[in-house]
Image (cartoon, rainbow, N blue to C red; front, side):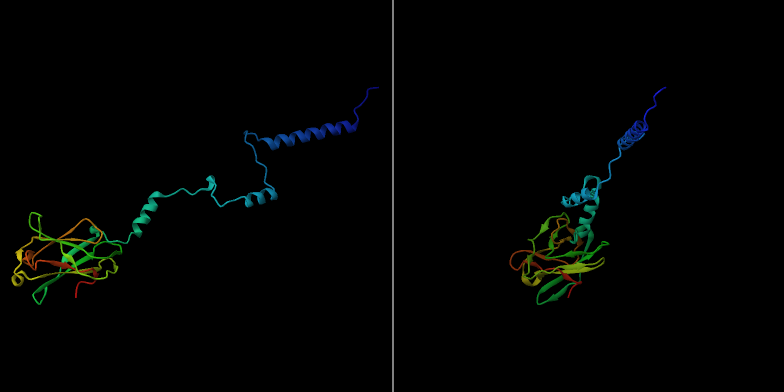
Length: 214
């Protein structure tokens, strides 16, 4: 009579096959990719405790260089020459002096600021400067905020050459340079002769203030 395999032996073989199948399933899939085991609560706690706050490379947010430059430009509050328009107001004579308001207007579409003294120089038709640079009248500058269309002014003063006897010349243009800028704004000069040499030939300029003059 043929011997049959004991039931216990068949059960053991079946259990081994099931275990092998489970192991193959855990190690790979049909497309060859592996499946990472799910972290346990202990693993998650260890990762959290060791996190120093740095951003993993897989979750890093790319930097926006152009955006940073735009933000920098927006936060630069100084008015630039290209954003301003210069003009000279009506003369205010008094005690042998000739006083003119030099006005800077914000022609841009953003709010900007001015602080300090403007530069000024009289030049002839060929661009040659007439006389020395104006002296700065003592004062305490304050920041002037100009919204679009806003204005600030500084006083330009000198003794009338007809009274002072200073050597005079008639400029073609007044060059006005905003504070902390290098590019000048050109204003046609129509107010006659200015002192350019000799006694009583100094010209003075005041700090910028809000408005268009006294």
